[in-house]
Length: 69
Image (tube, rainbow, N blue to C red; front, side, top):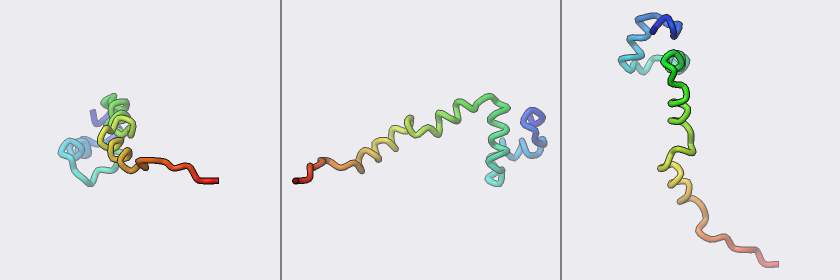
């Protein structure tokens, strides 16, 4: 796995432990090596975030008034 992700076994062990010092690039390499790119893309897609969409909807104006001429 480490070889497929182009990282050392020690770095892979840190990824598996959830070490916060791992760079996003290393994490991306591991995700790519696992073939999980589409799953991560779905995870970060704002259109699939039901709570986020509800919170955005709350910010919309309740009524829109036309300006007088």
